[in-house]
Length: 379
Image 1 (cartoon, rainbow, N blue to C red):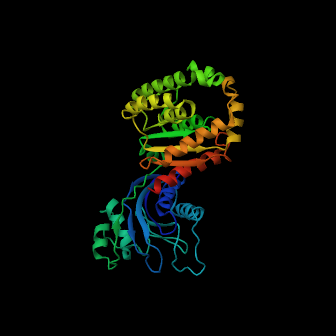
Image 2 (tube, helix red, strand yellow):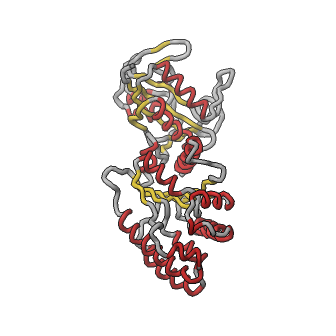
Image 3 (cartoon, rainbow, N blue to C red):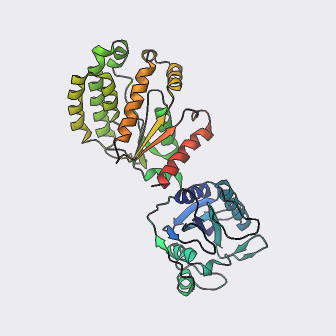
């Protein structure tokens, strides 16, 4: 097994969702190369050496057991997987992702396919500035000057602007940045399963809706008109109590909270199930409670087609759910969409999972996670 080496890399993107490309590259580096130790601020600058859109650039320090040649192979594969197309003539061009090895500790490597330190790094301000942010006193093993001196002497005066883009070294850190995530969806959409899976894999505190013990729920599906109001009131009281208790603070060993519901669902369901006068009373009571509960910083809505919802409801086999009509599910779905549309401050993402099986297929689960990463990076 190789020893651990600290390598410094430069990352850049000027095509598509630039912040997402940088973030996705970091997640892949964390999985395939080694631990990301440091990340510089992200800078924006004009394309260097050709006409193109502005770049986002950063530098990172990564600890790896790979050799320099192995490291090069991994970063080239990551570039390719994220859509990097290299020109046949070697000329500069726009790219979704560009990763350069700047230093491989203090080693000097000079082969036809790899040269370390990077032979052009001292000429590029968009490389030297973020490098100086994370390694100001790292000495170039050939030029014997540290990053600060190289930056001061650099003749490249291309303007750089520090951005507000925030990058994270791994998936756990990215999810922890949200603090509180709510996974929502219609009956049978898979929200509990997804919330549980994310909590287990990414060190989240799991908050699950306590619905199984509600004595009014089976009665409601048998006689909605009679039991709708006591059902919705009991749900509201229970959700309010749970949110106040469970979202007050993190567990000692958890880095974020994730719930399989948001308390606003109470009003969405009540609007569908209650008559006008009952709903007006309910809405007043709900308003008092809603002001006091914690709001999610990321709201995920799992969209499922109605026929698929009915299939999954049938499959999980709860007797009292088997008679749920399709139009009831569609009314609930419309209620959720109206809530998201009319809540401009809600950080909401709709994910269509109609064709996904994130329970049985790992690739489908990773598609959902990637959509969440892409959405976060776009902020």
